[in-house]
Image (cartoon, rainbow, N blue to C red):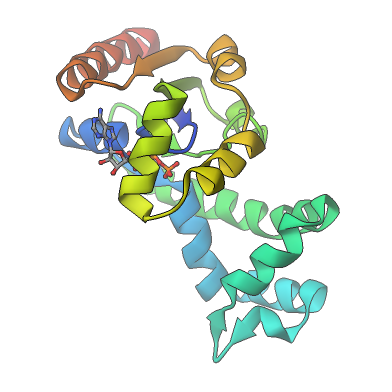
Length: 195
Ligand code: ATP
C-alpha cells in the first residue's frame, strides 16, 4: 500500500484536508487519535506506562492524561521514554489497519511526522500550511484556549519552512475553496507518482 504522510503545524488544517481526501475515497489513519485510543486499550502500553511512570498514570482504569502531560512536558528524556513505549504499538496497529484498506493510497495524519522521523516510513509526504496568526486564531476559536498556549505549542514544533523543504507536496490552507482545488490536484499528482 502506498502511504502518504500528512502533517502540518497546530491549526494548519491537517484534519480539514484529511477529511477532503476522505470524500475522494482515500482512507486516513489519524495517528494521534489512534495513539490516544491505544493508551486506553493496549495492555502492553498500559503495563509499560505504569512501570515507567507509576500507577497514577491510570485513574479508575482511565489514562490520567494531565498527570502524564505534566511529567513529559518538563522532562524531554521522559518524553522519549513515553514515545518509545507508544510509537512501536501505533506502528504495528497502523500496519494492521493498512493491510485492510483497499484504495489507491492511504494517508497517515501525524502532527510530528518529520519531528518523530515517521516520514521515513512513508512513500511520500504532504504538508499543510497556513500563516501563524491564522492558525492561532483558528485554534483559539476551536479549543477555547489562549494565544500564549497556542504559541507555546507552535514553538514545540518545527517551523513550516523546515517541513516544506522536506515535503513532496504542500497545500496552503487559507481559503477553503482553494484548498479543495489543491487537494484534488495533489490527489492526481500522487496517483501519477504511484504509476
Ligand atoms: P491540530 O494540529 O490542532 O489538530 P489541525 O492542523 O488538524 O489542528 P484543523 O483541526 O483541521 O487543524 O483546523 C483547525 C480549525 O480551523 C478547525 O476548527 C477548522 O474547522 C478550522 N479551519 C481549518 N481550515 C480552515 C479554513 N481554510 N478556513 C476556515 N477555517 C478553517
